[in-house]
Image (cartoon, rainbow, N blue to C red; front, side, top):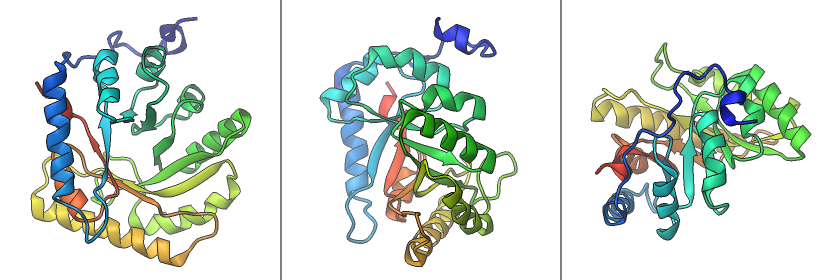
Length: 246
């Protein structure tokens, strides 16, 4: 059975739109992003981990990342992930960063190292069920809608702690931290404020020590704002365009 048979509702047959880059350009882009992260550390912490968002990138380009020791990659479409898996090295650590429909969980549960977008009870139930069937505990981050965008997924700040306390009912999920996604058109001052709010929430929850909950990772920042996010306390950033631009 092919991947198109598994995903008949997907109208786009072509998963990868990004034109292939030459290795020299990609290496330069990766170096520039890593340099920016090293110059924008939070306090005395280590630079934020770089996750390469490869959702529109060919497997040939993904394979080049392995030669640069950039092994954390991110996908957001189950069909694209299924199509790419046979063509990329098993050394890659695949992060899930897209809104996850419950009926797609079964396709990704064996392949991803971290779900960044846990944001509702029905999804938690399905992830817990599928992870249990797979004999694993699924690491996940809780998505927070800190900017209060009506069209965006994620919990309001006030909903996060009660949601975390309910995670004790899902033994096959291990919450490792928080994730946030900011509006693309926001100004730097406002972005910095939202990122600060996320770091404050992250630190408070870590201090509270909710049973079974770890606050190891704060995933925030994309190509347009990753430097600000890193400066304000992100432990990992999700970057695509800045890495894969020609």
